[in-house]
Image: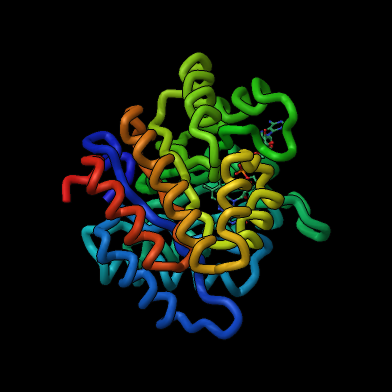
Length: 290
Ligand code: FAD
């Protein structure tokens, strides 16, 4: 199933997981995917560690298990290209296709020492390569409502995005954001730039102060004062912090549902409870027909 086909017929609900690393086994990650799947997401995306670590094999394995065991939920396998050769990409994509995974999120990956350009400088180069060589692959790509962290000029960022989409992107998924107005402004900017593919809004219900600080710093998302105030009110109580994150995310979700978003993607951070809380909220507000 091509994710773009689903997006052409309905507003979607999807979740993200990360593949096993450290002590986590592939079976444990698959159990997490099964838990998340109780919310019947249209797809579950699986992140990819840049730089060709062994983690990429785990991404392919978990994506294959989602695709094989959780239908009609589809797998969306992430792929970063900085530091990878065409051959690395071919090996990975052929492994995905052999297991029935046909949806790929084509990314550049973050710059890091030792991660040099080999065959691909930007995600657009990977998109063009995939489009030409694997027409059966449905290609997603990343976008940034507040601008990508390396690009200070929002208009230039959208111009680069337009070039990436024109290279063959079928749909976009946004970086997490905490202020919906940033998303609506970005959506208008994309429309003016004639970026015409569906834009799926990525929402992360924060679960702790530490987590929101780390995520916001890594991706350059701003944290509104209202979020900070709720976290201050939650104090040191981990459950109160998680509750504050769920409530805030649900407010964002209800507002997105009212404002005709193409799709909602939950950064569920390997926590089925996060998928469940957001699913319940989206059923309550009529976005998901329960
Ligand atoms: P690009 O689209 O290539 O853009 C990167 C930067 O280059 C931008 O600032 C853009 O404006 C600029 N640019 C693009 N083209 C040009 C050009 N021609 N000339 C000059 N500048 C240009 N990272 C992981 O490692 N693993 C993951 O699984 C992962 N999943 C992600 C999922 C989502 C939904 C998102 C939003 C991000 C994800 N990331 C992941 C992070 C991503 O890899 C980083 O944000 C990375 O720095 C940029 O990737 P990109 O694909 O957006 O790059």
